Image (cartoon, rainbow, N blue to C red; front, side, top):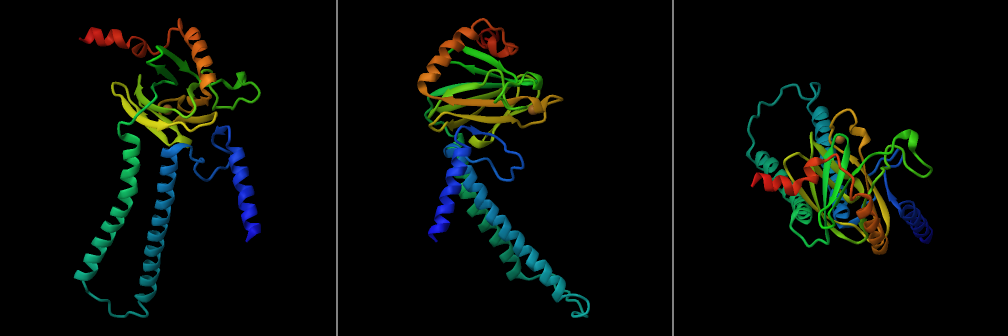
Length: 279
Ligand SMILES: [Cu+2]
């Protein structure tokens, strides 16, 4: 028993250390990425619970099918029954699935409520999906910049192929963030698996999602999750959570770096102007 505990703790340490600094897909990965933050943890719990429920239902249906095939095969059941109605069975196969759905609905609605309700937030980040890159806007800081994947021939040591970007989305650790997600052309989807954030980016519409970035510096990798054209596979998402001091430094640099950059997202840049024009 103590041996088992030892191996479990070794495994835990190993898993934790492997995932201490980055949440990213691994080669031959079968499972979900380890969850980060309360929303991802709740979503993973719901997923694991549903896995048990669907496995039990599938096994039960399989067992019934095997039994019926065996019990009522032609050899052992020469004269087939012509039963067409059985009130007890019909009540059962209506009530039991309803009960199962109610049991599933409780944690499911809890999770929706956790993600969707208007909660306290420390900062707002507006995300705009475009063919084929992301634009991140910090409305309170008056900065916005485009984030492109680093081309394969320009990758430096330590950078991840098809995942790393020129300008990552940088946020302070342990921050509650309200993401406003919109689009500039076709539909995209802003998806960071380890944070369980997955929201459509649609032109002319702003979707909102709340999340809490856990404490501790870490890089979260994600990808566009809605087929959006030939370069759909080449618009990854990099969200870097850094310490509060590092964030301040980054912000000071970013304000200079992106001050005179003309973003490709005109709609975002001219938001206030557009609103004035409409009025
Ligand atoms: Cu896409």
